[in-house]
Amino acid sequence: MSVAEEPIGLPDYLPAHLGARREPGPDHEIRLLVAPLAFLRTSRMLRDAGARFVTLLLADTPEPSLMGVFALRGDLVVLRAPIENGSISFGSLGAWWPAARWAERELVERHGARAIGIPPERALTAPDADVLDPRVRGLDVFSLPYGPVRSGIFEAIQFVIETGGEDILRLETRPFFKHRGMEARVVGLRPEQAVHVVERIAGIASVAYACAFSQAVESALGIEVPQRAECWRAMHSELERIASHLDVIAKEAETTALSVGQARFQILKEQTMRLRARITGSRFGRGVVIPGGVRFDGRIETAELLAELDALERDCQRDRRLFLGTASMVDRLFGGGRLERALVEDYSAVGPLARGSGVSTDARHERPYGDYRRLGLRVVTARDGDAMARVNVRFGELTESLRILRQSIDRLATIDGELTVEITGARNGAALGWCEAPQGELVIWVEVRDEVIHRMHVASPSLRNWALFDHAFPKDVLTDFAFIEHSFGLTPAGADR
Image (cartoon, rainbow, N blue to C red; front, side, top):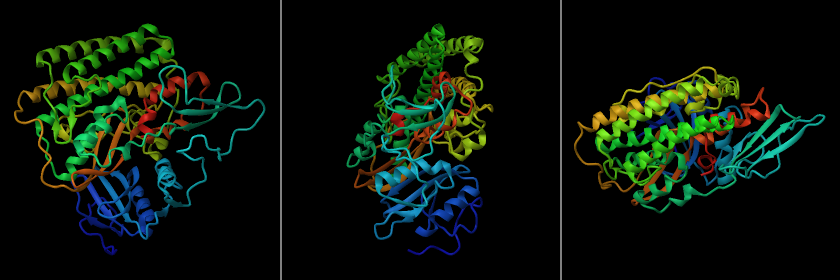
């Protein structure tokens, strides 16, 4: 392999001395080829240029390679280093970039990669492994393993809490208790079959996963989706966001035994889920988004849909005022689980978690996709970085989602044409697809060979954000735990795919 001495055709915002060669790729993908020994150095230069870490993965297209994906100025920069002699070896990014630690460790533990200089830590994908980190010591200090099985309806995840009684002195998050091999499960399936597996990776974000996967396939094969289908995808995505945010707020109310508030927000969530069922036939919007478009128009009249949205907005505004006006509720959220902006940026956090600390990252705005290229978007942020800030971001996004839905309904009236295009022509290709799931930016890498899925990699917002959970307890006590966990709004299933 030869790498050009001087980069050719690189965007102006990239350092001129990257020592990388630009490769062909879809829009919003800047593909760079580097020598294996230059992978670490180039990654560091991208971070210095302001890049945000997304994921590390192994690829087979166009040849076996280690790939790093970074978000920078409206593009995804894909750094590719060919694997020589079958040995996956690279300098550790996680040693100096906290955002890369979990993705790097998963690559090492699951795929036998060798990260030179990787910090000694507990095995990530074997949650029962011995802890190598220093532990809290002192009189009356004890460890409380909370999970993976907990009371209520919770997915499998464990938190090891070290405390002297009330203050949380140290916390360790342990995901990966139920690895399902979803990325391997789709191999050999046709894209229209695989999407049904992908949308079940995280039930609370089924539409988001279906959209990101479908967009990856479409980009890989050069398929242009009809505008009417893109409009419906945006509508399904915003309804999913509303349901997810209402669920988070209802759980916060439940934690303070604010029974009336919990009931009100759960009713609003249930109304949203029933509306989705009337539109799609599925409470989770499953089976609608497919590579090439959507299966059908919504099964509800426009006037009726607008009336439902008007009622939902009216009730949301009423219950928001009551929620924020209840001192016993908001007092538990103010100051809880505070995350400083610098820390959030170090971990390249996404979604309401990042926006609650003043980081205005949103894939709908940074790299507009589908109908979001035509819809105006106001990115909702807060600055305090605590549980209250993250709840306020969700309240703001409820209003913004309702506005987008109305705008999309107006657009539907002006768009005629097909809802899907047949996947024909190119039989091979590889590309990234992305969307803004309710939990944050979701990125999926897909390789298609001979019209079937050859490889898939999922960079979920939950995996990236769970890594910050350990840092959310600098001055908190055990009774704050549930408030902080709910404010993150994550799913273990999305992390352990």
